[in-house]
Length: 58
Image (cartoon, rainbow, N blue to C red):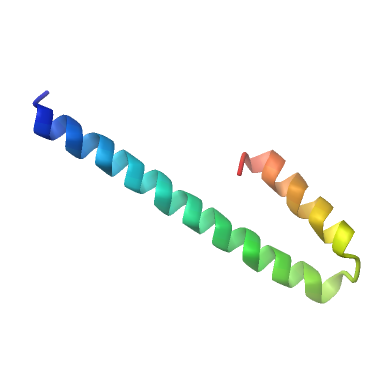
């Protein structure tokens, strides 16, 4: 594999990871907003989000 191809591979891999992390953050933010409309306890919302993060490795 050429040096140029290897660089493209690693850059592409890093970009895909960044996009996946941004998407994950958006989903968690939306989840927090929905939970806040239905649950009054901030501690409970925080616990739920933390559980989601631990289940999805976010």
